[in-house]
Length: 448
Image (cartoon, rainbow, N blue to C red; front, side, top):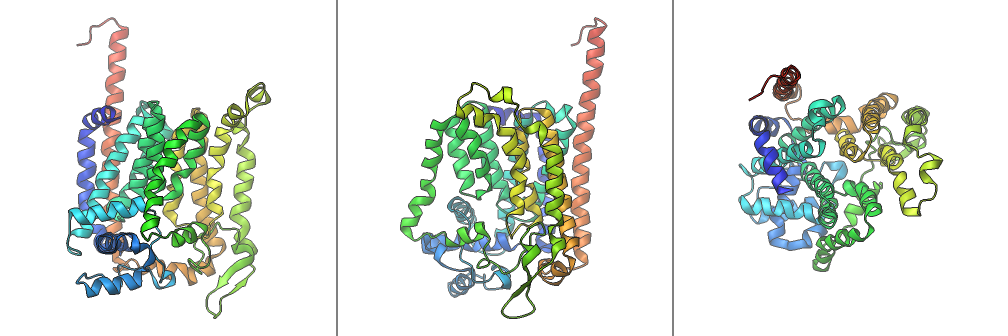
């Protein structure tokens, strides 16, 4: 894997330097445009780890900000804690995520100042490594297949926003996930499982890959279980994962808000937060995204189902492996099950496209991810009164420049567009050169 990474870094060195330069420009712009609460909060907990150890899991962000203020850390400014509607929640990220921010703050101690930008820079480096890993996994498809280019372009924008623009953990989760896929491709199943386990312990959404690995090589799951001790051992030193479980289950104890416009529960339980205690009312149009999704799946699922011949005479494990395309294709359906789905969550499951063996399956999956994105927007319109009254105003508060935010976003979009044009121009140039060489060889000319 290291050899492949080194080779691809050299091969794409010009574009990686360009991407890194754009990231460095985007980091300070985004830092002014957006209150990056997740990054700020993780920064605070990273510093607090060296004081309280794993006991930070028992401290909610408001109390911790007060305690850190008494110790001389400038975290009690309202920007290092979650918004009021999520206030009083203890740390909910898995252990490996906490360790990453603890190490980041140890490498660059001294809260405030340039430390937040340092964290974004580290995540931007990880994002660049993710692009290299995607190039390894996509191989020649990156130059020859339209769907692969669209996926790569989508991930480029998503990854740039998550790293340079948001300081979020997603780039690290994806890095470990993509590393596990490369290791699996190289038949290093134990290492792949261990790395996947670390990814799950950064953010748990990458666990969707585990069933595929398990069915292909059940014994390798020992390494996945072994990696879990990264989370189990800290529990003996004060770590508690109640907030993580509450976040994963998206119970009302985590938030009374429902920010997923595709959540079917809004049909019979849209909350009215203008009264205390909160009441709920029926709103049938909220079910429209689910009905449209089910209709879309019924129209497109057939190519992902195995035939009777595919299943005949095979043991149970191999029969289950034949259901792999069906399982992967239905994964976006889990986005309908949770109350708390922010817009960028829609691309969490996009890397799953790399697991499809058939190109037509991969193309269909990318179409489905696009459809789910439109259904998210449709859900906002179907329940516009609720979202424009509660979640949206609180979300906008994270953009302190208000209308000026659009100017900064335009600059970032221009930078991303320049990068895409540069990549596309280079790929087209290579295609033209390859065509000229093939034509010359066909005419019997010697190519030097």
